[in-house]
Amino acid sequence: MPQYPQVLFKNRKPNRVATLDEYRESGGYQALEKFVGGGISPKEIIRLVGESGLLGRGGAGFPAGKKWASVPDSAAFPRYLVANGDEMEPGTFKDRMLLHVDPHCVIEGMILSGYSFSGSKAFFFVRPSYESSSVIFERELEYARQAGFLGNNILGTDFSFDIVVHRSGGRYICGEGSALLNAIMGKRPNPTKPPPYPTEKGLWDKPTVVNNVETLANVPHILRNGAEWFKGLAATPHGAGMKLYCISGKVNAPGTVELPIGTRLSEIIDEHCGGMTPGSEFKACLPGGASTKFMTRKHYDIPMDFGDLKAIGNRLGTAAIMVFDHKTCLVGATLNLMEFFARESCGWCTPCREGLPYMRDLLWRIENGEGKEEFIPNLRTLCKEVWNSYCALAPGAAEPVISLLDSFEDEVREHISQKGCPFHAKADH
Image 1: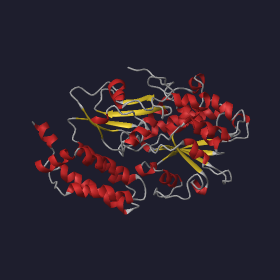
Image 2: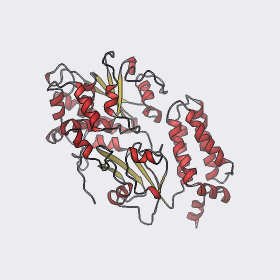
Image 3: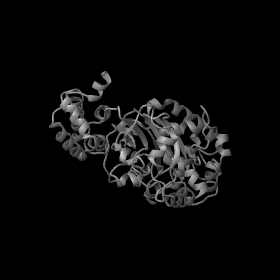
Image 4: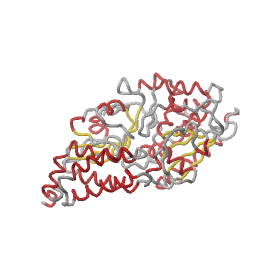
């Protein structure tokens, strides 16, 4: 198995969280001491993170440095940071693993991010089923405060910054940036459209930066080792950094692995996940969580990076790879996803509120022997219409459906012609 340097998982221990002392022994809080303690300009952090090519790890892939730089110098105070650890998308669990491995790289990253745009308070947004993560994080935050890395006058400077854990209501829509901010403020978590952008008016109309947990965890390492070092970690010339890939499904060793961004899908499955389970053959995968398109065998060797997947009309998303074998009914798998998305719609706009249950109903009928030929063009039309929705939830939900029809239409038609799921019939024999 190819061996790669571990950055975010450097301090990974069997069945326990890395301590503050262990994090410091590995170089932790050196970046904070250098930049904050040394009085280096916050704009130098933005410059270095921008030059590193760090793209947001939460799904959108937006440049982190560019987001921080979008907070106007003349913006009001106080300014806030939100670390989005909601992670409600099916198949995605990398941020949870990171918190259970080395929470202080997240804490240091949050403090440095806050320093870069003169923030004073951060919210760590997490869902109820991650209570163990919340407990760990709150405990380690207190250790950071006791060490002088967090709270008032950090390292004896004029910079004060604190972090609180915000336990959310646990809905998928809360992972959308503007809905997340509404949830923190105690409002109904409906999305809102810019302008203004959150970096201008976010929480309580104050400038607010929203970043993914993994994104923030990379920051101390970039500042300690340099932008060129970070770029050099990637497996592709256009990539930057390491990446946490979380793999589930029909593989021998599911879990979360840290690999150079741009590592080929075939290497991830065959080498780092021990290959397909006995008797299984690769049929397809969702490369970046439930809101990405099915990727077939012809892309088995594709580099798993933002640009490479965009080039084939797909997305890296959260890098949550869900693997399906030749015995898996993809109509049933897509129906399962649509059950989730239809349930999680916030109901704010008609295309999402009405369109997703309609798509779910058509897929249910196809899977259960009530399918008709006209359902196929009906589904294609619905996949286009949900792009008129207010936020990205419905268009994301349509991705597995449209790719099912594009890549596995024969399988859908077989369900219709046989008046039921052919995979169930084979299993019965």
